[in-house]
Image 1: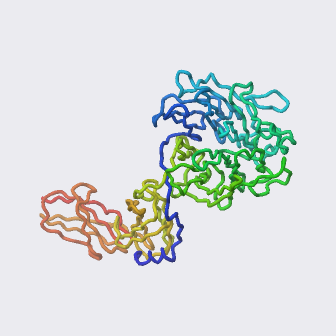
Image 2 (image 1 turned 90 degrees about the horizontal axis):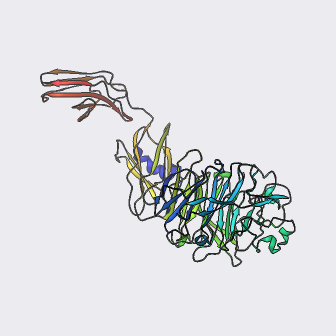
Length: 595
């Protein structure tokens, strides 16, 4: 029987895919029903106000957890929305309390990047005055400035906005799109594409910004001034810096800029840039991560190698989403200084240890995946957020469906029993049984699982086996098995999954082809045929059609029974055939009237 084989299978024959033995994190769902949320921004002026930036062009307002009927901002009528286009970023400046300003980044109807400044309504600080819009004006070769940055293709728009600890606005610009940066824009000093920009938006200059004196070109960086680079440029050689952040919170902060740059076909990379280290060339399109991508000279040397990279090979990931260096308290000391990031295409989430030298440079430490323990994989983790306590959040959305966007908080696993495992499936190929399931999405994190096996629904008479695997497979004897799985941790054990019924080497018998009843006074005679392979026949009787109040088995080859002295009444009776692999459906139902 299965009880004799399962321990051997788990110990030696099973294909076991281990999960984290001591899960430490979980994802707490806070809100759902969004479209494609790519930003959660806390209001620095109005206490309790939180804004959810949606790629469709609407910024929704939540005050103390309740959504207000009027959005903070709605630019859906002027954005090109779809794919990598739309409303892509929003940030408050350091002087938001006095200037009442907010900055947004979106692609306009023609697909070009617009960085716009808005002002809050005087009547309601949680509503933007649409008439206050001012598009920052950018260099345009030898022509007059224009209020957008031209994008030659629809993808690689970057779009994130962040104010650094220096008070300046950083704007991540993708290379303009298509494959292999066909215009070599990331290495071209006369275009803003493929760069990290840094500008001063304080005051009301004619173009909406001025150039900080400490930018590479005004500061006289010989690498950039020697090639006549645009003064807005802070660093070179980026493919699509979709999300980046500053290590500017809490004890141990370094104020470093951490850029997650989306790769092409082979590598995803993380660049750690110590405070003030401008003018770096991160290498694209000459390199993708540390791999040579294009045989040509870059705009200038040296090329800065990534602090960390991971390959596409083996489906480790395909599109990195940058997060934050954690310096909060809720996750515990073990996570302090670790950089949280995700991969959108694979729906996976990780944390990376960073070893920071006295020079301020960082090298990569251990890289840990948290996807399973946090209830993933997810749809697409498109962005992260950080609150005023340094705790982290992430946004998840599906590319093909609307209203699937969700917002999660990253929490420490709490001291509660886990919820039931999810999506238990079982398959049979010959004598080989395979079981698989997903980690619980509710309750505490699971340390392991219990596989329960019985010969009937809910029973465990064939044994219980503990494992830390989420997939098991092996050869088992002929028979029918009812299998379910429970999750367990140090606090307790979950409820079971629904049973999976596995028939190995045989099938349940056919229902009795004939079933007759004869009533003589208070005596009823039942007769049925015994189908091939039947080991017993069960007679079900109830007081309504299809109902069962009594089930009585009769061992084969018995094919009839006479029951005397039945009380007066009307009974609905049917027969089912049973063997080691299950029970048939019912025979024809007979109505028995005893007077």
